[in-house]
View 1 (cartoon, protein in one colour):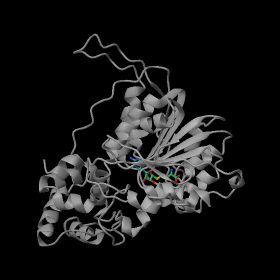
View 2 (spheres, rainbow, N blue to C red):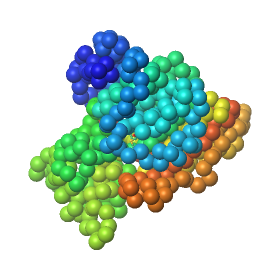
View 3 (cartoon, rainbow, N blue to C red):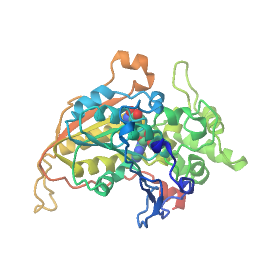
View 4 (cartoon, rainbow, N blue to C red):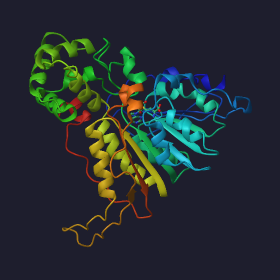
Length: 392
Ligand SMILES: C[S@@+](CC[C@H](N)C(=O)[O-])C[C@H]1O[C@@H](n2cnc3c(N)ncnc32)[C@H](O)[C@@H]1O
C-alpha cells in the first residue's frame, strides 16, 4: 500500500543529535525517493511526506493506530475550530489523528498535521492515504508551524488546533521512558533527536536539577530530590525509569490516595527534555501570525503550567495592548484575538469516566481579529536544555 511504504533512506534519518546540532533534513517525494536538502536551521529533523492519493484509496477505513489514543475534548475542539468547507487547518499535534479526522470530515478541507514524533507521522499514513490528497503530515516541532505553512505555500490558514502533551501511545510504550509505572530507558523524548532525560539527569548540576524539578514539576521537595539524584549518580549512572522512580520515592513520601511520589519529577523532566513550555509560547505567537482574520485558535492543555501560558497569551492578545511608557512612539495595539471561552471548557463526567486521562484537560479558544500581531514577549527565564547540556 503506497502510504504505508517507509520511504527509501528512512533508516538514515535515525540519527541522534545533540541540542543545536545542524541537520540535513530529507524530503520525500511521492515515489518514496529521498532528496537531500541543505538546512542552515538548528532544529529537529523535518520529514515532509506528501502523498499523491490514488482514487482507489478513497473511502478506505482510517488508521487502526487511532484506536490507541482516545482524543480528549475532540468534539468540543472541533466545534470551536468550526471548520468550513474548503478551509485550511493546522493540526499542530497530530498524534493518532483524531482531530485531523474530524476536520477532514468537513467537505474539501485541507489539513496540515504536525507532530515531532516520527512514529505518530508514520502511524498517520493510512489517514493520508484515505484523505484524497487533503492531509499533509510534517514531522517537526509545532513552534515552527508558520515555517511549515510557508513551506506548503500557505501564508494564512483558517484554524490552528493544538492538543499539547503526550499521547497514550507515548505513555504506554515502556521503551519511550515516559512512565514510572513500567521500567524502560530514561528517555522521555517525544521526537527522535536531542538529549534524553538520562542525559539531563547525568549532566545537570544539583542546583539546576532542583530548579527544573521545582519549576516544571511544582515539586515542593525539589531540593531533596536533586540531592538524592546527585548522590545516586555518583554510585552508578541513572539510566532507567525504575531507578529514577526509586530514588525519588526515597525522598518524597506519598500519603494514601495521593499521586505516585515520582509523578512531579517525571513531569518536570519530560517538560524540560522536550522544551514543552517554550514550544507552547512560540507556537501561540506563530498561530497569531498565520491565522486569517476570523480564523480560530483552539488549545487543549493538561496541566496548570500549560493552561496558564494559554490563558495569559489570550488575555494579553484579547485586550488593547498599552503603548510602552518608555517608548511612547510605539502605538497601542488593538486586540488580535477575541476570546471565545471566558472560562476553560473541561470534559464532562462521561468523558472522564470513559477516559481518565482526560480529567485534567482544559480547552481555550479564540478568534483572530484583523488587527496586526502584537510584539512577541521574551520567553520566561527558566532553565534551558541547551545551557544545561553545555554545562553553562
Ligand atoms: C495528546 S497527543 C495529540 C492527540 C491528537 N489530538 C489525537 O486526537 O490523536 C499530543 C501529540 O503532540 C505531539 N507534540 C507534543 N509537543 C509537540 C511539539 N512541540 N511539536 C510537535 N508535536 C508535539 C506529541 O508527540 C503527541 O503525538
